[in-house]
Length: 128
Image (cartoon, rainbow, N blue to C red):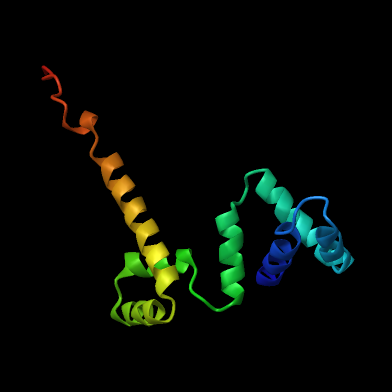
């Protein structure tokens, strides 16, 4: 259900604010869909989720790999999963490149945060 709601959210909120297109998209929704779509928008406005999270919800419905799945496979290094990853790379080159760049940036930031200047400072000798 999340993928369908993410699609509906995109349909409504991709139109200009206070436009006839948005009103039409809004009026086509059922009452329960309106509630779900606006709850999703409220979560975004409150900072609970990001636009990227909403895009990943949409991808789950399209049966394409999400970034969370990609990250899990990259961290696991299982042979069968790496074959799945190479198949994904063949089918979705652009999306794979985006995931790869994002994963590389996250790993680099993690590595830099682990080895800061404070890690290598000389510590004063403590007497016992």
